[in-house]
Length: 289
Image (cartoon, rainbow, N blue to C red; front, side, top):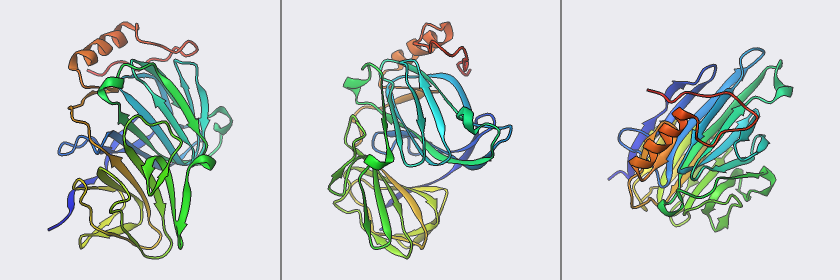
Protein backbone atom coordinates (compact mmCIF):
# COMPACT_ATOMS: atom_id res chain seq x y z
CA UNK A 1 0.00 0.00 0.00
CA UNK A 2 1.53 3.29 -1.09
CA UNK A 3 1.91 6.00 1.52
CA UNK A 4 1.85 8.70 -1.16
CA UNK A 5 -1.52 10.36 -1.04
CA UNK A 6 -1.02 12.50 -4.15
CA UNK A 7 1.60 13.71 -6.63
CA UNK A 8 1.01 17.29 -7.83
CA UNK A 9 2.75 18.45 -11.00
CA UNK A 10 3.85 22.07 -11.30
CA UNK A 11 1.54 24.17 -13.52
CA UNK A 12 2.78 27.32 -15.24
CA UNK A 13 1.34 30.76 -14.42
CA UNK A 14 2.32 34.04 -16.08
CA UNK A 15 2.58 37.15 -13.86
CA UNK A 16 3.69 39.71 -16.41
CA UNK A 17 7.36 39.37 -17.31
CA UNK A 18 7.85 36.52 -14.86
CA UNK A 19 6.77 32.89 -15.28
CA UNK A 20 5.96 31.00 -12.11
CA UNK A 21 4.89 27.45 -11.37
CA UNK A 22 1.77 26.99 -9.25
CA UNK A 23 1.97 23.96 -6.95
CA UNK A 24 -0.91 24.47 -4.52
CA UNK A 25 -3.82 25.03 -4.25
CA UNK A 26 -4.71 22.04 -6.42
CA UNK A 27 -8.24 20.85 -7.15
CA UNK A 28 -7.69 17.61 -5.22
CA UNK A 29 -5.62 19.18 -2.44
CA UNK A 30 -6.34 22.72 -1.33
CA UNK A 31 -3.91 22.82 1.60
CA UNK A 32 -0.98 20.88 3.10
CA UNK A 33 -1.09 21.50 6.83
CA UNK A 34 -1.56 25.30 7.11
CA UNK A 35 0.19 25.91 3.74
CA UNK A 36 -2.41 27.16 1.27
CA UNK A 37 -0.43 28.56 -1.66
CA UNK A 38 2.99 27.87 -3.20
CA UNK A 39 4.38 29.54 -6.32
CA UNK A 40 7.74 28.47 -7.72
CA UNK A 41 9.50 31.50 -9.22
CA UNK A 42 11.98 30.58 -11.94
CA UNK A 43 14.75 29.72 -12.30
CA UNK A 44 14.77 32.34 -15.02
CA UNK A 45 17.21 34.90 -16.38
CA UNK A 46 16.19 38.50 -15.78
CA UNK A 47 17.48 41.67 -17.43
CA UNK A 48 18.49 43.90 -18.99
CA UNK A 49 14.89 45.02 -19.63
CA UNK A 50 12.60 42.45 -18.00
CA UNK A 51 12.56 42.18 -14.21
CA UNK A 52 10.29 40.89 -11.50
CA UNK A 53 8.03 43.75 -10.49
CA UNK A 54 4.79 42.96 -8.66
CA UNK A 55 2.79 46.15 -8.06
CA UNK A 56 0.80 47.00 -4.94
CA UNK A 57 -1.68 44.25 -4.02
CA UNK A 58 -3.53 43.24 -0.82
CA UNK A 59 -3.67 40.29 1.58
CA UNK A 60 -5.80 39.22 4.53
CA UNK A 61 -5.86 36.14 6.77
CA UNK A 62 -2.42 34.74 6.00
CA UNK A 63 1.34 35.03 6.40
CA UNK A 64 3.59 35.21 3.35
CA UNK A 65 6.94 33.43 3.34
CA UNK A 66 9.42 34.46 0.65
CA UNK A 67 12.47 32.23 0.21
CA UNK A 68 14.97 33.00 -2.54
CA UNK A 69 17.45 30.43 -3.88
CA UNK A 70 19.04 32.83 -6.39
CA UNK A 71 18.63 36.54 -7.06
CA UNK A 72 17.22 39.24 -4.79
CA UNK A 73 13.95 41.10 -4.24
CA UNK A 74 12.93 44.32 -2.49
CA UNK A 75 9.82 44.11 -0.32
CA UNK A 76 7.83 47.21 0.68
CA UNK A 77 4.46 47.30 2.45
CA UNK A 78 1.72 49.45 3.98
CA UNK A 79 3.13 49.14 7.51
CA UNK A 80 6.31 50.92 6.43
CA UNK A 81 8.63 47.98 5.76
CA UNK A 82 11.40 48.25 3.18
CA UNK A 83 13.45 45.05 3.21
CA UNK A 84 15.73 43.43 0.68
CA UNK A 85 15.86 39.65 0.66
CA UNK A 86 18.87 37.64 -0.48
CA UNK A 87 19.21 33.87 -1.03
CA UNK A 88 18.84 31.78 2.12
CA UNK A 89 17.06 34.46 4.15
CA UNK A 90 13.35 34.58 5.01
CA UNK A 91 10.84 37.40 4.62
CA UNK A 92 7.78 36.65 6.79
CA UNK A 93 4.82 39.02 6.57
CA UNK A 94 1.65 38.45 8.57
CA UNK A 95 -1.24 40.17 6.83
CA UNK A 96 -3.87 39.62 9.52
CA UNK A 97 -6.70 42.17 9.10
CA UNK A 98 -5.09 43.64 5.99
CA UNK A 99 -1.83 44.73 4.38
CA UNK A 100 -0.70 45.86 0.92
CA UNK A 101 2.77 45.31 -0.50
CA UNK A 102 5.03 45.26 -3.54
CA UNK A 103 7.94 43.03 -4.54
CA UNK A 104 10.42 44.34 -7.06
CA UNK A 105 13.92 43.88 -8.42
CA UNK A 106 16.27 46.17 -6.44
CA UNK A 107 17.42 49.30 -8.25
CA UNK A 108 21.11 48.36 -8.23
CA UNK A 109 20.35 45.13 -10.14
CA UNK A 110 18.52 46.87 -12.97
CA UNK A 111 20.57 46.99 -16.13
CA UNK A 112 22.23 43.71 -15.12
CA UNK A 113 21.52 40.13 -16.13
CA UNK A 114 21.03 37.63 -13.31
CA UNK A 115 19.10 34.49 -12.39
CA UNK A 116 16.04 34.69 -10.16
CA UNK A 117 14.80 31.57 -8.40
CA UNK A 118 12.69 31.18 -5.30
CA UNK A 119 9.38 30.36 -3.66
CA UNK A 120 6.46 32.55 -2.67
CA UNK A 121 4.44 30.76 0.00
CA UNK A 122 1.23 31.57 1.86
CA UNK A 123 0.48 30.12 5.28
CA UNK A 124 -3.10 30.46 6.54
CA UNK A 125 -3.55 31.93 10.00
CA UNK A 126 -5.47 30.20 12.80
CA UNK A 127 -9.08 31.41 12.94
CA UNK A 128 -8.50 33.33 16.19
CA UNK A 129 -5.59 35.26 14.61
CA UNK A 130 -7.12 36.17 11.25
CA UNK A 131 -7.77 39.74 12.44
CA UNK A 132 -4.37 40.45 14.06
CA UNK A 133 -2.42 43.60 13.27
CA UNK A 134 -0.04 43.18 10.32
CA UNK A 135 3.62 42.41 11.10
CA UNK A 136 6.81 41.91 9.13
CA UNK A 137 9.94 39.99 10.10
CA UNK A 138 13.20 39.43 8.21
CA UNK A 139 15.35 36.51 9.35
CA UNK A 140 18.89 36.32 7.91
CA UNK A 141 19.97 32.94 6.66
CA UNK A 142 22.78 32.88 9.22
CA UNK A 143 20.15 32.62 12.00
CA UNK A 144 18.37 29.55 10.62
CA UNK A 145 19.24 26.13 12.15
CA UNK A 146 21.55 24.18 9.85
CA UNK A 147 23.08 20.70 10.18
CA UNK A 148 24.55 17.87 8.11
CA UNK A 149 24.32 14.11 7.87
CA UNK A 150 27.32 13.06 5.82
CA UNK A 151 27.20 15.08 2.61
CA UNK A 152 23.49 15.86 3.04
CA UNK A 153 22.71 19.32 4.42
CA UNK A 154 19.55 20.46 6.22
CA UNK A 155 18.15 23.95 6.89
CA UNK A 156 15.09 24.48 9.06
CA UNK A 157 13.53 27.44 7.27
CA UNK A 158 10.43 27.78 9.48
CA UNK A 159 8.64 26.04 12.32
CA UNK A 160 9.87 23.00 14.23
CA UNK A 161 11.36 19.69 13.16
CA UNK A 162 14.25 17.33 13.79
CA UNK A 163 14.37 18.53 17.40
CA UNK A 164 15.10 22.10 16.31
CA UNK A 165 13.16 25.38 16.07
CA UNK A 166 13.45 28.17 13.50
CA UNK A 167 13.38 31.83 14.67
CA UNK A 168 10.67 32.64 12.09
CA UNK A 169 7.66 33.68 14.26
CA UNK A 170 5.03 31.27 12.91
CA UNK A 171 1.48 31.15 14.30
CA UNK A 172 0.67 27.42 14.23
CA UNK A 173 2.49 24.04 14.34
CA UNK A 174 4.28 23.75 10.99
CA UNK A 175 7.64 23.09 9.37
CA UNK A 176 9.63 23.92 6.25
CA UNK A 177 12.97 22.16 5.77
CA UNK A 178 15.43 22.56 2.88
CA UNK A 179 17.52 19.48 2.05
CA UNK A 180 20.44 19.13 -0.37
CA UNK A 181 22.47 15.96 -0.89
CA UNK A 182 25.54 14.91 -2.82
CA UNK A 183 25.43 11.11 -2.96
CA UNK A 184 22.35 8.89 -2.71
CA UNK A 185 20.61 9.46 0.63
CA UNK A 186 17.88 7.60 2.49
CA UNK A 187 15.57 10.15 4.12
CA UNK A 188 13.44 8.98 7.03
CA UNK A 189 11.10 11.63 8.42
CA UNK A 190 9.13 9.33 10.71
CA UNK A 191 8.84 11.03 14.11
CA UNK A 192 10.91 14.03 13.01
CA UNK A 193 8.09 16.08 11.49
CA UNK A 194 4.49 16.29 12.73
CA UNK A 195 1.37 16.66 10.62
CA UNK A 196 0.75 16.52 6.89
CA UNK A 197 3.92 16.38 4.83
CA UNK A 198 4.59 17.80 1.39
CA UNK A 199 7.83 17.04 -0.46
CA UNK A 200 8.70 19.62 -3.14
CA UNK A 201 11.38 18.46 -5.57
CA UNK A 202 13.40 21.53 -6.61
CA UNK A 203 16.16 19.64 -8.45
CA UNK A 204 17.06 16.02 -9.02
CA UNK A 205 14.65 13.27 -8.13
CA UNK A 206 13.54 10.77 -5.52
CA UNK A 207 12.28 7.23 -5.16
CA UNK A 208 9.29 6.96 -2.84
CA UNK A 209 7.23 3.80 -2.29
CA UNK A 210 8.89 2.27 -5.38
CA UNK A 211 7.92 5.23 -7.57
CA UNK A 212 10.48 7.51 -9.25
CA UNK A 213 9.47 11.18 -9.19
CA UNK A 214 11.45 14.05 -10.72
CA UNK A 215 11.74 17.79 -10.16
CA UNK A 216 8.73 20.04 -10.59
CA UNK A 217 6.46 17.85 -8.50
CA UNK A 218 5.10 17.84 -4.95
CA UNK A 219 4.39 14.60 -3.12
CA UNK A 220 1.72 14.72 -0.45
CA UNK A 221 1.99 12.04 2.21
CA UNK A 222 -0.86 10.59 4.17
CA UNK A 223 -1.12 12.24 7.60
CA UNK A 224 1.44 10.87 10.06
CA UNK A 225 2.16 7.99 7.67
CA UNK A 226 5.05 8.69 5.33
CA UNK A 227 7.36 6.12 3.80
CA UNK A 228 11.13 6.43 3.57
CA UNK A 229 12.31 8.48 0.61
CA UNK A 230 15.52 7.85 -1.31
CA UNK A 231 17.14 10.96 -2.72
CA UNK A 232 19.02 10.50 -5.98
CA UNK A 233 22.47 12.14 -6.15
CA UNK A 234 22.48 15.96 -6.21
CA UNK A 235 18.84 16.39 -5.25
CA UNK A 236 17.33 19.51 -3.70
CA UNK A 237 14.09 19.24 -1.68
CA UNK A 238 11.76 21.39 0.38
CA UNK A 239 9.77 19.53 3.02
CA UNK A 240 6.80 21.48 4.36
CA UNK A 241 3.51 20.97 6.16
CA UNK A 242 2.17 20.70 9.67
CA UNK A 243 -1.03 20.32 11.61
CA UNK A 244 -4.15 20.99 9.48
CA UNK A 245 -6.79 23.39 10.76
CA UNK A 246 -10.24 22.08 11.76
CA UNK A 247 -12.02 24.79 9.74
CA UNK A 248 -12.21 25.16 5.96
CA UNK A 249 -10.28 28.05 4.40
CA UNK A 250 -11.74 30.09 1.56
CA UNK A 251 -9.42 31.72 -0.95
CA UNK A 252 -10.16 34.43 -3.49
CA UNK A 253 -7.24 36.04 -5.29
CA UNK A 254 -4.93 37.24 -2.46
CA UNK A 255 -7.51 36.90 0.31
CA UNK A 256 -7.72 33.91 2.69
CA UNK A 257 -10.29 33.51 5.45
CA UNK A 258 -12.58 31.13 7.30
CA UNK A 259 -15.35 33.63 6.45
CA UNK A 260 -16.64 34.27 2.94
CA UNK A 261 -18.20 37.47 4.27
CA UNK A 262 -14.80 38.83 5.35
CA UNK A 263 -13.44 38.14 1.89
CA UNK A 264 -16.35 40.06 0.34
CA UNK A 265 -15.62 43.01 2.63
CA UNK A 266 -11.93 42.94 1.66
CA UNK A 267 -12.83 42.79 -2.04
CA UNK A 268 -15.05 45.86 -1.75
CA UNK A 269 -12.44 47.73 0.27
CA UNK A 270 -9.86 47.03 -2.43
CA UNK A 271 -12.25 48.15 -5.18
CA UNK A 272 -12.97 51.38 -3.31
CA UNK A 273 -9.32 51.81 -2.27
CA UNK A 274 -10.29 52.03 1.39
CA UNK A 275 -8.07 49.01 2.11
CA UNK A 276 -4.79 49.77 3.98
CA UNK A 277 -2.58 51.21 1.24
CA UNK A 278 1.09 52.08 0.92
CA UNK A 279 1.86 55.79 1.39
CA UNK A 280 4.79 55.96 -1.03
CA UNK A 281 3.48 53.84 -3.90
CA UNK A 282 0.54 54.70 -6.17
CA UNK A 283 0.54 51.46 -8.16
CA UNK A 284 -2.59 49.33 -7.94
CA UNK A 285 -3.39 45.82 -9.13
CA UNK A 286 -7.14 45.73 -9.86
CA UNK A 287 -9.35 43.07 -8.30
CA UNK A 288 -9.71 40.29 -10.89
CA UNK A 289 -13.17 39.59 -12.27
